[in-house]
Length: 367
Image 1 (cartoon, rainbow, N blue to C red):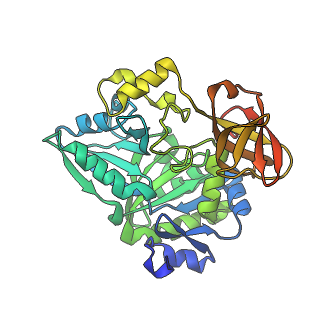
Image 2 (spheres, helix red, strand yellow):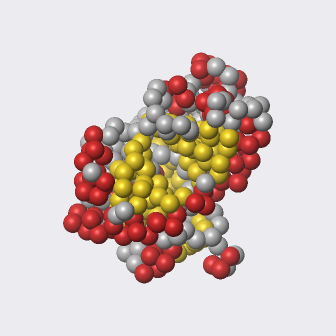
Image 3 (cartoon, rainbow, N blue to C red):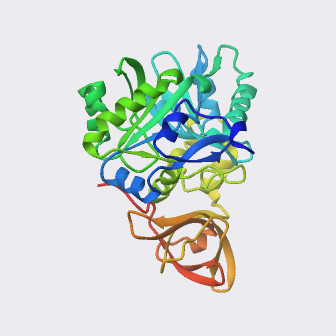
């Protein structure tokens, strides 16, 4: 696929001006890095970084039965959003238990905003529409093309946004939602992210994305802000133990198997996939996700085999250098009997079996 055929976010020219290396990601021409993945990763851990994630999808569900539809679609309990301006991490689950996608649901004053993965927009939109037929009083809008999304992440993220949007953002709790004006542009934002750091995901009209990006970059320069690409986004989320669809989650893997049981509420009432997930919670699963710390410098990568002795028992789903941690890390699926903390296993890397140890999830947690 050539670059000319790829979709681009409204910020693509800004990325090129900043010297970004662009790559094909899920049909989008996206920045994978600017200075370096290490520089960008460390900036988010110690200062602040800004990501363009406008390739993500956004759906709006409204109407008298909007709550009922969303509650039926997701594994988490929508009633946890007890008032407007709150957010929830959850999954769409197939009746047989596999994961359609993971997403964030925002309860707003008059509707629900669902933010889904870029690679799954078309599939998710069809999934939502197919099941919405059971609910007469709902209205659905796919506003992905009209919506830009910026992720401002790191210890200085709150200070940076507060200087532009007002001090009220400082008082926002995690997984809440707000609105403000930045550089003359009306924006909304959740105190959410995908890096393990504090920060915000900022929704902006697509045609005003450049103005808001530049305003944040200018204000953030006082704190050493770095523009960050998908490379650092991946290494940061891996250190934070966060799943990536197509790696830790897919249509053959349930949220229970992925270690996300905390986000599955089987007692809330009927929802897609409930029966299988309830059975997995009660009876256990045949595979479970583990976090692995590797010895030496060799990096475990997706698809590499995991061994207990000479027997292959699983496969790495994601792996890289733990840039902030200082050692190689990986996520993998193994049988539950091999998932106990401290278990010694090995990963096949080229011609060697590199020793690894099962350690607590997440690899990194901010203080």
